[in-house]
Length: 219
Image (cartoon, rainbow, N blue to C red; front, side):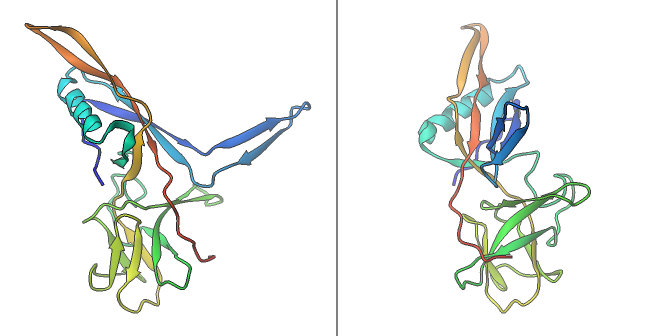
């Protein structure tokens, strides 16, 4: 799958949508229903550089090449793209746990856990688009070798053992977010003439895609 091009002339704001329904009664008491366990992220482009013409052209070419909103692609969320606690923390093969896939299959799904400082609350995130060449896997803290001890499907984030594994499996590495254009990129011409002027991109947004999940064994 294609990866969204890096364009240093702008950044992105991000929000995580959990789809929560809030009903307020006549008494003022609120009842809350969380419709989704897993959130969907929305990324909104924020230009912050005056020299946008090169990046605007790059986005325009990418938009047409994939057929606009007809195709999905991968996006690197610079605020959260590794298994580590923060993007600047070194990656280790014991950063995160895995989920066992059900249906009598010896397979494991990569996940990332998010907890509060007191560890009272916990949120799982299924990592279905790991970045090839960055993934490290360990059994009971001992690092394994890809292609010898296990294989990994980079389209699903599922690990398949190639040897007998009886210990605790963990992993570390980088990952992408599967997205598509939520809005059409907008462009504007600033004082365009034969003597100068620039083409600038004024904004667009990307929305994370909900991918199919396999059935999982109860933990």
